[in-house]
Image: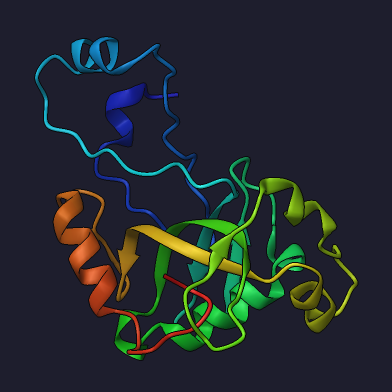
Length: 178
């Protein structure tokens, strides 16, 4: 009602998913660089998964939201449990962006192999047990940004710094999150 300027300075609040920033398709590197106009940028691998925003309360409770803001926790109870176990207490509450991908885990505990997006469709949905979901298609949450850590909105902090504090917020040897 008050225009875009009224949004400046409004903090991200755990439990209220903000809309994600979406990419714009271009046909190659040259048009992408031209569109950026000389600005610095980050190029990353495109994971073939489901975008998820994790909201972790001060009590460690986790709610997962889809790109459209729908509650995705019932579809990924194992991700919620892994995040609850992985985040250090001083990092709570937190809001994190992740890509949830189906993986094939090595029997010897070695490197995971990413699976196609369609594998996620084989996962049981709400009402199914977490162990059934994990057995059907194990997943890993690839964390790529932090919007809130330790209850502090850090969206105005440069991405490199947000990633550094995100890495420091994870317990050593955390499983199910990267």
